[in-house]
Image (cartoon, rainbow, N blue to C red):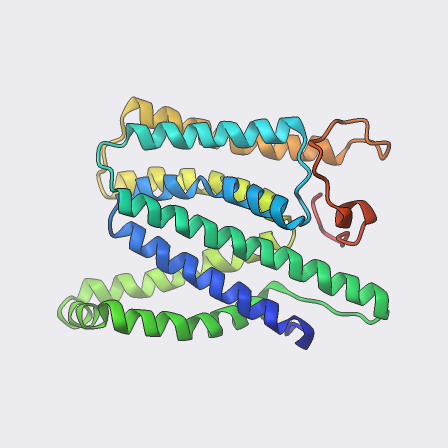
Length: 277
């Protein structure tokens, strides 16, 4: 279903943040090894937590176990960064900027859902936003940005490569298939969770990507880097278990959480079917 007209400005903002995130990520890939770039992406939860706290969005209340899991995840990513033999400051900063844009995308999506749900309650009219409709609109809008950036930055280079090399055309097709499959599934998951949970669980997926990229591109991984990867995976699993435990706490609030629960959460405006919180 298409997003309601009242949410179209939100869709435009989501599309811009989403597209900017991928543009910055691709620029980071050009300066860092694929496994290292994905490890930098593992720092995204730090940005997500900062944004949801700053904007008072749903998901800004974390238990001590959840916060400990996030800090452990960041420790694992830091160890991996330290162990990487080839370091590009520019590539690292581009990766961090990409994290900020993706964190904004998750925040904006959560805020849009909450506003639509609140309007539905007040107007008593059924309004739904499904992941397929949002995916379609954000990519149509993002296409305009991507085409302009591609032509201005590397249009001639890419055109020559596609004409001269058969494997380049093959890789572009498979890249497009993988891009659609991953991002469609990621959006489905995001609309079931809050911004922080989505970004933390994404780190588990990145661990698989890190190992796969290291194998495919023959990137050496030291024992210290391997330890950092294991910590990233373990902390992602720990966060998931802590989130599940927090969801089972009785309504009297007996489990202690960090003191920045938002008013929207306390009033229950953000509640919706299928939310994992």
